[in-house]
Image (tube, rainbow, N blue to C red; front, top):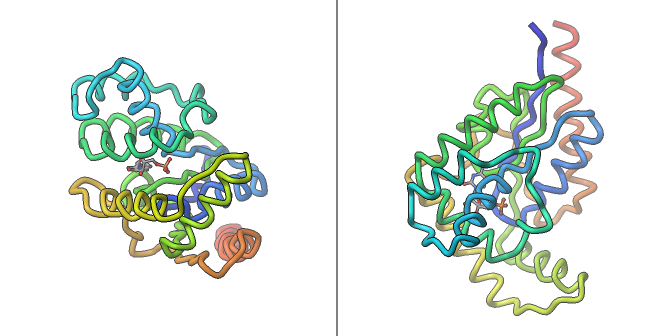
Amino acid sequence: MTSTFTIAIDGPAGAGKGTLARRLADHYRLNLLDTGLTYRAVAYALIQHALPLDNVSAAETAARQVDLAKLDRAVLSAHAVGEAASKVAVFPTVRRILVEKQRAFAMTPPGAVLDGRDIGTVVCPDADIKLYVTASAEVRAKRRLAEIESIGGTANFTEILADIVRRDERDMGRADSPLKPAADAHLLDTSEMAIEAAFLAAMAIIDEVMAKRNKA
Ligand code: C5P
């Protein structure tokens, strides 16, 4: 049997888990999957066909058609798509279809870093490492605003903050696979921490687990 190494990263929107996941995948030479893109792809397909976001059977069809190798971040990263994704993400049947694809990805050697909301709790409950990355809603809103402004856009801080709070409520409050830290997750609060410091903290945790595993 070929063994794989899995790093599960969960947390709310804008906590910095995407950047951290990319850095860790590069460093440990693992595959990388931003599972948010899979929910975004479903929402985007419905929007493209002018279908309502509560059309469950259309969402299931779109979920079956999601090809992990063809997720287009540039198209899917729009703010409105993220908002729509959190609406289709409440449907258990849609989640089951996407989770199956995400698990198959995780099991492909040499293993993967997956980031999302339910990786440590549902998708990869046996992950070698589980990180829960969080930051205050204000800090996340400030980062989002800076990101938008850095690419020449404009946005209103109060509106961004309200969006973040609403998305947190939807993701943490849904019945199926709500966002919460797994019991055995390492918590990383990035409110006062630069992403580089979060990366170093994560590396220390991972290196320790890897060293133990190599000794066993
Ligand atoms: O992480 P991102 O902002 O791209 O995720 C968009 C939405 O997709 C989230 O707000 C959440 O509702 C949903 N999602 C999820 N489970 C995941 C990843 C994302 O429910 N593993």
